[in-house]
Length: 197
Image (cartoon, rainbow, N blue to C red; front, side, top):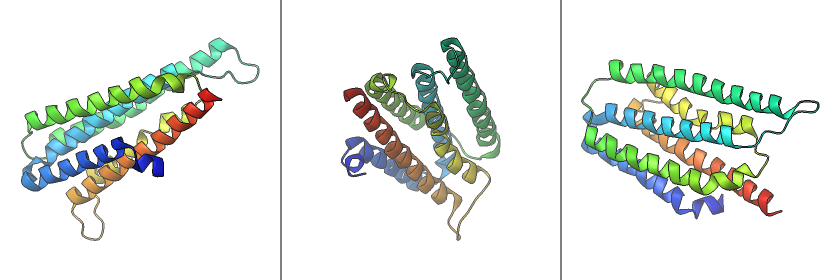
């Protein structure tokens, strides 16, 4: 945990989410834009997950062939695309049709570009050592769903102790981002240890 807190990416993630909160305080009509940004960020993370599922080696089960292991990995990746995609298709319909307000296209595109670049840089740095390890594909499969939980809560209109849905959403989004960062860094550290042994 101490290594994660000392990581500049941790503070950049925190600063980015603080920027979103500041944006909303100045543009309370822009909640629909924030939801779309969160949706795009989830898609970028889903794409990163798909790349990892396809790139990481699969160890055949006892008695299984290498081809069957590859087919299993392909089926797992395909199921992830279908399941994760259905979730996000439903969310997109809800955001576009169910949320009022205009979309700040300039802010949305700028923020989305920053997030996409960040995800690409993450893959470029951390995928090569992960490919050399026996990473748990099931763990990687479920990791992005940390983001679906807060999205689901806000879209069904959850509220806790009188806290507004917007406040709850932004707090949960920040927690989900930081939680994914912590777990991702631990996975990466284990991968490096495995490579160096």
